[in-house]
Length: 436
Ligand code: PMP
Image (cartoon, rainbow, N blue to C red; front, side, top):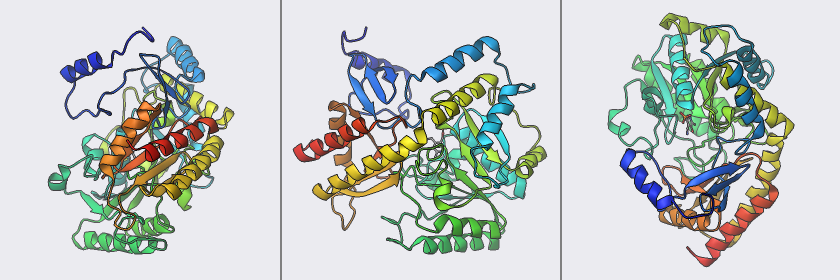
């Protein structure tokens, strides 16, 4: 019962009996979460936390519009997608209307998760080009299924693939202007030129690229924005080589950037295939691929495409309710305003605490990179973990990301308030001042 006792140790023991060791968990003594409301999580002792990491519940926890949509639709109809029903068409049209005009992205395929969306995107690229090779960037996370895991290159998420990666994947250098091969502004064209060299080598080996996949902002690295000009140059080179460009927007799309709805709009490009998931259902499992009819039709060469629950009336109604709430509650605009406030707050802290290196990201996808030395960029990994533990004691849920686990990832529900943003900055200031 709420407030009676801390059940988290019992629950942790129960969990270790039942789950695999590879299943991720956070904190030395995880709290047991019982309830969520807007950008707050509440544990079984009644303690509330500000949730700074839940980018799946984009609208916030416990959203009544989503709850009503589920309740209404599940009483009316929920079946698989072999029939005609209006929810699928309505939701697909709503999604397409979110794309900038004239993109040629006019077809939606719905699945149940981001990994499935990435799998399908890779299949589409291979089917449409008649080629096999997929180029993926270093330090990326794209999912857990066999194909999405094959293009997952982060040593943290997929250490084994260093030796056993399938031969249809080529890993290109990650354009991280803060700590990558080339540093500083103006390096986008150098990274793109290196990608061009990779594409030429692949062609000379008879392994021409079917597609190039990357996050439009490097989410897994901590919200690191791509260098100026990189994506446009990279896409041009991939297309010149006959390949297709896949934007993985599972994390960075859907209004989180604040100034744009999609991550790729930050770079002024238009992908051939877009993958979406996480916030689409505000926690309800939905994923999707948006592409052109020509590319989607190529799937016919591989037989029928069918996903039992993908695009069912229930998930479509949830998806519509999410889009309604995003519009009615002005959440993209809130991401822009509160995100900027938060970013300025973190940057001000960087002026006082040398442990803070670059502050990455935009809107409500930010990354506070912690380094022991601003010159060498030695990652402050142990410090980052300890700071997260202490922040939790102070009522703020923040976790680490990047291959080095030294970036505080900040991707809260888009309804985060200015007051809570200020609280988080003040809490981080306190931890960095007092120690941890
Ligand atoms: N792509 C990206 C960029 C992701 O961050 C994730 C999930 N973290 C996925 C794909 C996979 O999504 P899911 O967990 O819904 O399968």
